[in-house]
Image (cartoon, rainbow, N blue to C red; front, side, top):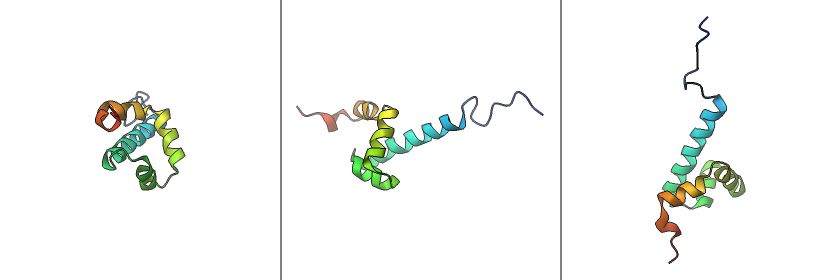
Length: 75
């Protein structure tokens, strides 16, 4: 038995890999729906509050602002 096995994704746990995939999916949905969180939540069949929680947990709102500042520019 190989005791040096680190898994398919290196030293990352399954939870870490799942969280990264979830973050990527949320960011992609926000891009696809032009930042519309209601539509993104519907696409994932979750409540909008659940989507907000996942975004806050993973700092996605801040990342999305950096990637798409024109959407948030009110000047």
